[in-house]
Length: 67
Image 1 (cartoon, rainbow, N blue to C red):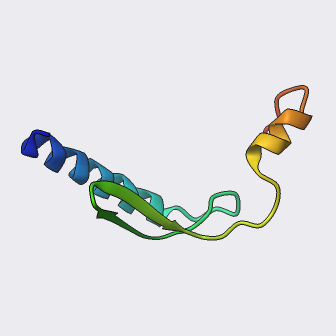
Image 2: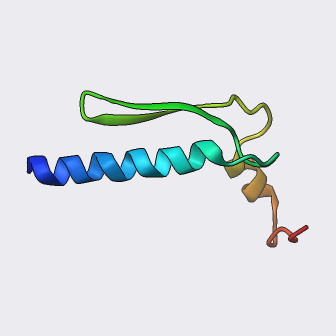
Image 3: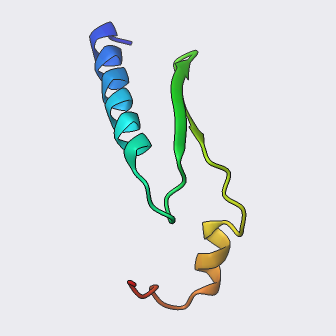
């Protein structure tokens, strides 16, 4: 609960969230906003429709090819 450590954690979260928000790729959900409330960090992300990653990986016997 050290205030200096908490401040550093928040600054790192803010920096990384800003970086994520600049990414533009069809396979990466957009980041619209980020914030902290009650000592919890939140990202507001684009809604992606489809199956979840656990289901896809459970059906796959091998790694996916890079393309």
